[in-house]
Image 1 (cartoon, rainbow, N blue to C red):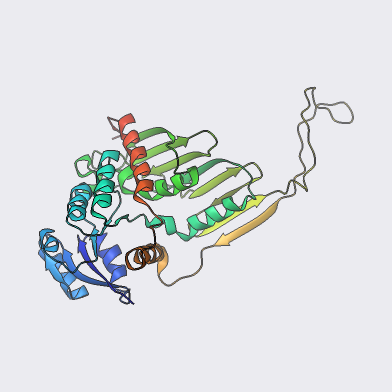
Image 2: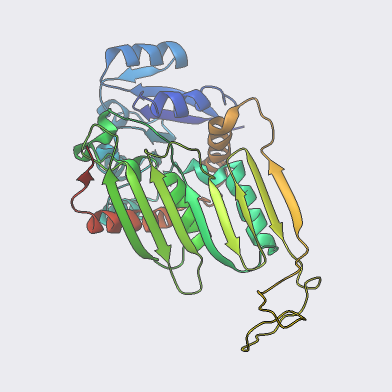
Length: 357
């Protein structure tokens, strides 16, 4: 089996705790041969943990001719320039989310990838989350009928105070957390057309100047309305998903899910009545509908690896097939470009973030 030789830019929470943690375990398919970080203690830790070469900056990787993949886990504002530099130099690149903050940046990267013939992959691993796959499975089965609305909440309560709360660092909930649920939302909405976008953003609990409360609505003719919330001021845990259908609905979190629906063949036939409804004795009546509900439930399969490792493993399995066997990417740059266009429009609609302090 071919081993993919990897260089990782960044040894922070993404570079080490996500990419390094997974790749250092999947030694049959991947080998970390180099790591980059400006902090000496992080370089020393990478050398000890991976047994790899280390560099102070990305130029050390550019001089190598033995890398099959460069993982760009640098801070967000370096995603576009570093990914562009490596694509132009002839490297396959996996870029952490967000790929960019504007569609133009995504366009430049896609163009560079096509010109160099190298792979541009984006780490949208939540596409492979077990709970999301289950949501898609239920919707695709048709038991819920036509889908009117899908509400998604990636929210909690936190008072964040790190660099990812700063607009100067391309921070904020929309660019930090948003790419995960937004990628899922656009898969359910459809990636063949740009949705109409309404977005409201606010700054509530964080100590930087970027938004930490986002309410986003996506609409389109013949498409489900998507209601997406990404908030740091929700003290009570909500359902991650709530799906409204013409024959039933679904609600659930990342660990458990339930849905109910009716079979049209079992439901009483109804017709529109324009005259006031009355009971047998002539007194006023309200609409009644004796629906027989079918109920189902799902629980995430038990695994020793946990959710993040499961998603990372599924994503890297997909990427390995692309790099080693030439199988097309399941998460394409063009799909991610749609996401970035939505994010850009959200920022256009919120040029000034109101700070509630």
